[in-house]
Length: 244
Image 1 (cartoon, rainbow, N blue to C red):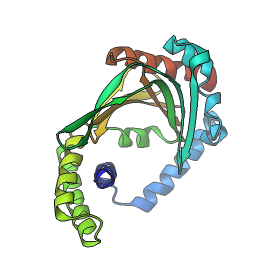
Image 2: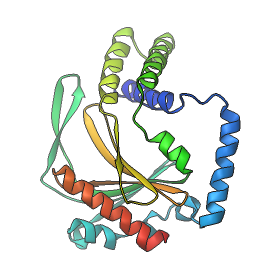
Image 3: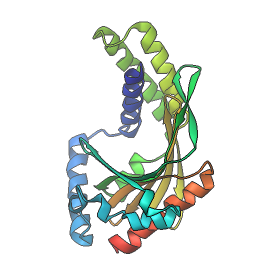
């Protein structure tokens, strides 16, 4: 069930961000050309930080922002396909209510953390295209795409009709949480992206600066405003100390 929900939610994101792309090959060529030009101009290459995210977000930065002791921090580095992440974590007494089935929740332990992910080269146009609030038309088209995907999964024996209907409902509930908020005076353009799936809500800071984009997640308390400020401070430190 969880895999089905994730598949539908991912398919939704693909569907609405790709809406309107009528000349995909040409746009892809233009995008690659613009990225190459941006790298040539700024010298900021995501490839330079591959497997070295701790050179962008250092333990010292995380300690300074979080106010938590370096001696108790645990560095977590992971890679899965094109996704690479680095997190500094501390134990906490906090828990979060997570929905594992429709209407059923568990209290899951969570750690205090500052995380850096999705370091990549892109263009401002593409960045804004990827992170925007979906229009009614995009939502309508995405719903149609999800319905088609649901039928395909049933036909392939990957889900029963009942599972697909339930998963679709959960995915649509997650989609309703998707919201983008602009962040002024950070990099060239930045936004907070709210999303959630299977009852777990996330709030990520997406930053674009000189052809490079990256994501910061700060989860250090139950105070969203405080977490936002620390995520912004972390991103600004990366820009000032590592990317200028």
